Length: 383
Ligand SMILES: [Zn+2]
Image (cartoon, rainbow, N blue to C red; front, side, top):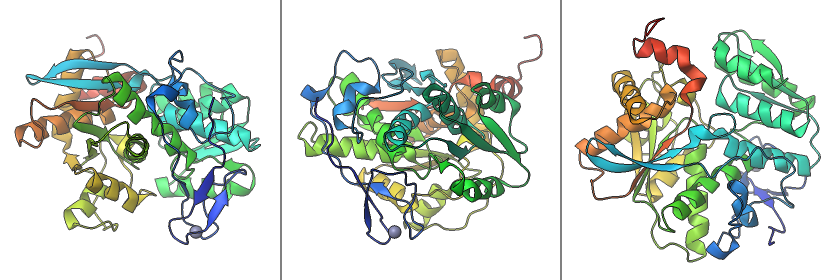
């Protein structure tokens, strides 16, 4: 089996590069790091007997086979009618911990094991915290997760059930991040938003869509977007296929945000790649409420290159979309319903046309938020 020989990280700010043979989550200059361009994938390199993302191991930036796996990836792609239009729904909600994060986490944790990391911590109150705590448990390494004091109990239970040390931090989400940063000397900061191998994992979404559509790329992909790790993973994956001559066109990528907290939408409307201050308020799509995404310009550039865009949906669009998805057989968390709301809008304004191949990525299971969904859909105590 071909494995990537030398893996390097590059700093987009100061251009320094590092061999990725030791634990790193950011550059000495303070910027995030990116993985250097990979060798890419051709279809004859796919390990076709492997019903998980490890079918693409030939192109992953790891030096050996996985040391830990929970069978992540190779999620179903299901066709349904959405307002009379055939659309394919990618069920990332069916991952081991119930969210798409397992793609990034599985590859990141295997890299960290390869470079000798022993104990990790992370800040998250949601799907990333649950995913990282679960994979740390599977790998047998200690894990501490910093969470906001007001985090939803259901999510905390999933984190704590893995045996992770859960530390509740009072105050803002920023205070939680600062607590995690302050702990960087005690254990490795396995941040899904910073560590570049997380995006190496999310790129396998591009390979799966291409393969599941009969080695063709779709016209459009809609993704719920907070920090943008799926957008960056899709761009990286399709880029690798294009460079190897496997595809000649790229899909339009649409980042979907909740209008109540939409950093990318604000910058997109301003026409640049720079962060612009924006007003924010709570949203039912709490999984994508990201006040200041790390790889900000990169996400916007990926969207522009793809000729896609940013769609910000209102709360009153998200809840009916959540209800409609449930009736189609997709019990997803409110965050994932944003893409269905965006699809409705893009079909209505003609941006997406009925004859095109459109993929809607459903990122998280409704089992994560059953109580909240009950409230939103007006389902009483005895339905
Ligand atoms: Zn740097």
